Image 1 (tube, rainbow, N blue to C red):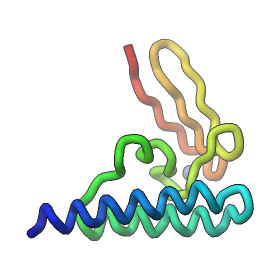
Image 2 (cartoon, rainbow, N blue to C red; image 1 turned 90 degrees about the vertical axis):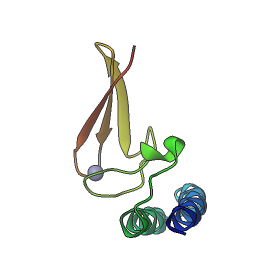
Image 3 (cartoon, rainbow, N blue to C red; image 1 turned 45 degrees about the horizontal axis):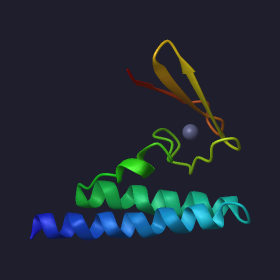
Length: 96
Ligand SMILES: [Zn+2]
């Protein structure tokens, strides 16, 4: 039962994040709201972001991140550095 609920939460997160992506160009506040809702589901259902969405939400301020608009992605010394331009939080992801 628990696994099932988590799966359901994950699919709802998927939908919310797609809506956020659609909404972003015309209504940034709405996109951030969707991202916040998705993040709420994570904690409530002990679920995880699908991999392709994981880096699209700032861990600190919870805003929806769009590369080239409100977040900066740089590679340096085999690390990807993702900077949230909303709150200035930096996430570094190593790669080979
Ligand atoms: Zn942020």
